[in-house]
Length: 461
Image (cartoon, rainbow, N blue to C red; front, side, top):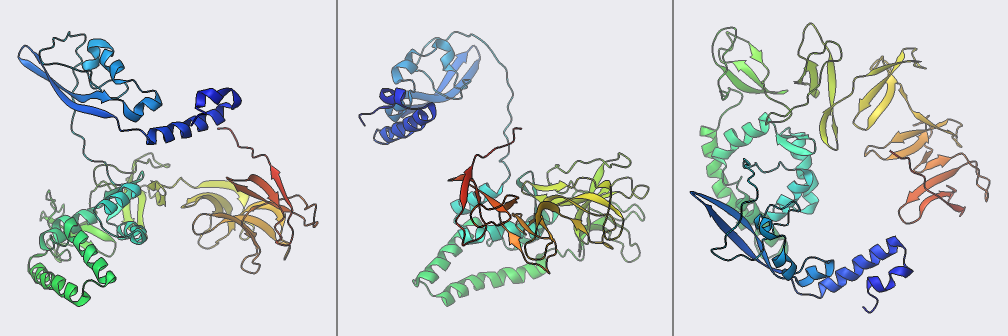
């Protein structure tokens, strides 16, 4: 404690001083009492109008004094009348001490209109946090919950946020909610989790717990058989849609490719139509892309293999584009780029495509030819003399393997460097980068202990 940061600053580098000051201040602050503020609401009258400001009046600096925050006296002296505003540029929301009857001078009047913003949609992190706060699920089930709601098309992930689909809204709002409102209640789910914990601890009987659950569930099930909407028969959309062939109302039905609009006059009228919804977002947001051939906007469609983008100029323009799922959610794949290079198997042109793991080069005659060009590392496979190429695992991890796989199973999990090993004479080294040791070049053989540290060079943006 006797070595405060300023007393030894001359002996430290700037980075060392910063880290030492951070640790020293945090330790001292942990031994100090908390800062205290008075939460204050001030009403300011001006003729027939009343202006209200909310903020905090500092009473005791406490541990904030360690971080060179302004003391209570400094706040009180403050910047004068302007300090009354709790909406300061620094966002501190700190008010000076005020007394009833104080006269304030008008320095500036800034009219602003503000609207209440809806809560932000869930991301993976905020959804897990909400599950934890409500006592739903377990850490081992969070990943399963997130994958299931996407796999069953209840939500789509757009720009890192979950947005309900038409199926998700229809399933909850118009089907499950009226008949199974108790099961959908957060409180019910939390209580059931606690009952399951009691069964695991041996303090509750599982048969009694399941019996009490099923008594209520059986009644809900019988009521649902009579009152629940049948999507196979059709549900009228809101607002209503009229069939453009016979004039009868259209209804929402469920098929093997999802929800669609069908004429209620079936089988006399077999007219069907896609749901005109802003997929994949359910609140007006969608993937905005233009057709690279005719310039018309692309629209989200659904087929047997899932969602895809199609030109709104169909049938004159039949351009389509894949929709891929990335870490940020669903996005449109880039258009294929045709290359002059020929496929070594069928002599067709190669094309640059985009998949879930990024760009790759493949034959334009797919699926007749399934050739995929791999990025060569320049290393010759020590087993069969094939080319060692860069590949990706199912989880997106880069590794290096023989191009003759599955006939040859040679694989490296670190990037090969074409430099012989000085110790054992192996024809190449491997590069390993870690936070602790930085960049190291080492021999890939387990019996060889050659290791050399190298400076890690990063490319500037």
